[in-house]
Structures are given as C-alpha cells and as structure tokens.
Length: 128
Image: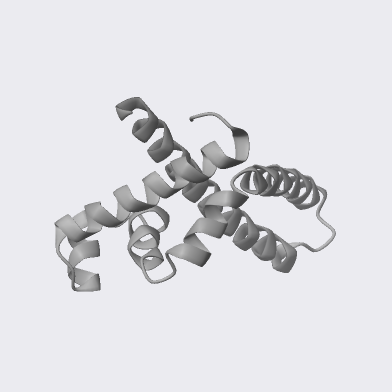
C-alpha cells in the first residue's frame, strides 16, 4: 500500500510537471512567433518546440483521469494542489495562502491520491 501511494504521488507530480512544460512551451512558441522575421534558426527552434509540445500534450492525455478527478470531485481543493505542484510553492506558503493548516493540506493530498488509486484500479483493473 505504501509503494502504491509513492507511485501515485509520482504520477501526480509527473502530471503537474507536464502541464508546467506545456504552459512554458506555449509561451516560448508565442515569443518566437513575435521575434521571427524569416530567420531559419528561429524556424528550426520553433518546429522542434512544437514537436515537444505535441509530445507533452499526448502525455497529458494519458493522465486524463487525473484531470477529471481534480475538476469533478475536488474543484475547491484543486487550488491547494495547483499551488504546490504547478507553481512550486512550499507547503507552509500553500497553507498560509489558503488559510488552512498544514495538516489539512496533507489530508487533501492524501484524499486525492487515494481517489486517483481507486480510479486507476477501476480503469485498468490493476494497482499502480
């Protein structure tokens, strides 16, 4: 059970890291579009980053069940998870910013991890 929680937490972190990469790549692509003036090197970089973006988007589609869990079942608790994993804030900052205790933050994470495990078992018929 402990290993399952570790694997689930790793999966959740990977999901958020991939979302972060997609966001930053979108920003970089927009910047390149503004800078580009028939420059071949810019076009090469732009095409390479678009390929990486598509790869990350495919990876996010693998975690679509995590997205649905966060949006449907935990919309009010998503702010805590986003603050920690998407924006990289410390647990202390997350607790202070959301006016909750540290224990509450950890309970939210554990609740979401358990729901992800349950959903994964239902979808794939096996544990993580």
